[in-house]
Length: 170
Image (cartoon, rainbow, N blue to C red; front, side):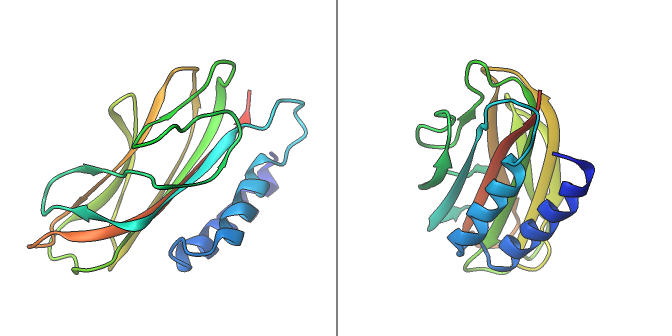
């Protein structure tokens, strides 16, 4: 992936965010853009979504439980919350997340986090009814990616979202 491809990825990510992860074609286009490269390495990655509303309690960090797998090239995702880098999957990875509230409005602070092996690596605050966050970093086989959301909504809420994880370099 060249430097010029980052603009394309950012543009496509914005399109997915605006569609609030309902457009599978946009999700697949993002995956194609991120995995198109000429470095001679195997394409590797996954695109997951939370389609059914997931309960998010008030002021308690909650991991996304993914219920829809749009793509998974090497078995990174089995079920639940964890995405695991497979054997031979070490390299530079792009991780992008979008989270969207369905029910209650945010009354206090809110954020989306990307965690690697349980430690926070990136976070972004919620604005209005959603948040998006991205990360580019080297990962090794066996490392686990999770996405958590925290929101002060006074009464709890429900949410949907998506995560895209693709290896872009060795």
